[in-house]
Length: 336
Length: 247
Image (tube, each protein chain N blue to C red):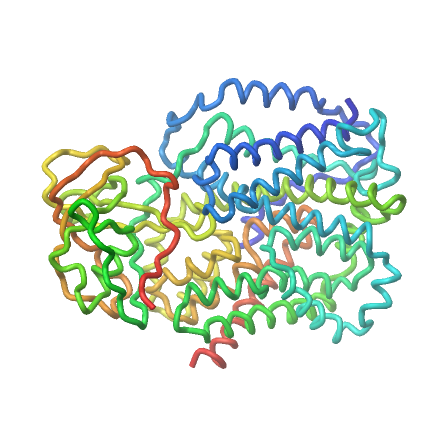
């Protein structure tokens, strides 16, 4: 299912040799000037009405993600400028079995949402962090940080177990995927990330702004692709379709897992949406919370852009399955 | 222009749009107020990245990244898509979510474990309250704190569901951004005037009592018998931001 939805399919091939016709910056200026002078020209005239909802949801996802994207590229710039591969090599454990859980715990310290963690993971990889650890960090950071856990506690008042279950489920997902990926992930995507990002030396400020600008360009573009996909699915898929399966345990779990992929809600807000899906069991809603930050259409687009289409096509199903399994396990242990 | 400068122009366009969203208050159509300063901060970061030398517009004209990541190796075209939201924001200026975004089901907050706090004092003859409070008290409060109380609600007109008479007063609650919006609704009866879809209204009336549905996950929306209905300008901010009304 994920591969058919994957909007990241159009990843441009890396063909630097051929001189490409450049888009001139003056064209951008011209476009923006025209847009400003026609400001609001189409305001209120958009029909069909679904398009009106679409534009609001699309812009909302981009605007909401922008601060976290900015934070992400600043951090990834700082990693490039300040952290040398040699330092990382000394600081990090060599064994995958130690590095992966360590990366998961490190993820708890970064209060961002998932858009921030994709470029950071790419940079960590390029700086020589074990790929499995970088993947684990990418999954853990948006899912188990303090902001997300507090939001979950607020959304589920009187049910602190939900917070614990979410924490364990997401931590388990990130560690499980990291360990599995270290076996089956291959090296091609690492080389791709290193090839695209690696080797920034020279003055620190240049390295910082160069890395930040590059990541903003890449991750920002894919964010737009993902936001468009998520907005389209939000407008097209009626909620009533979901409610039909709410009282069938297995289908309910899969339906809410799938919903988390399609909606691409920020990890800091998904707990509130889960709380409102009252027709579903707590277990199914926990699956929604664990799957959402790990994989969704927006993330698949961003990961496909950075690590390649093949990566996204294998990583997304693996993450989805691991998240469902870990959420169910956490529900078994904590929620009863 | 060099390609690096072209990118700078685009970063400046995105950054300036973010700053404008914050400055004009349009950001509130998309995100909760708490996030608006962060949108400003993101805009400033983008402006800085687009302006500061050596790669930004203020740098030397021929500045090329010295083998850096933004260098010659890789030129993804995907970044151009950042222009799309900028153009949508400027040309379309999407409005806050309206009645067409209401799905078939409106949200009903759950009952908390605690008591409902006492009602606020009436202002000009009616108790003003957010839609979330009205819906929660009406549907979940076993103590029926709303019975016989004249309340004042703000929302827009959405069509009635099957079997309803009248129309539904609606307000969206968002938690982070408009992508996670949920509709809060009350069925309004006793309003003789036909109302246009999406018209914002201030409605005074009393709740039509019904037994509390403490456990029902999706009870029907509560009913308000309208006594006075007044068209108003769209409120700023357009959304509500919480559904928590019990301890």
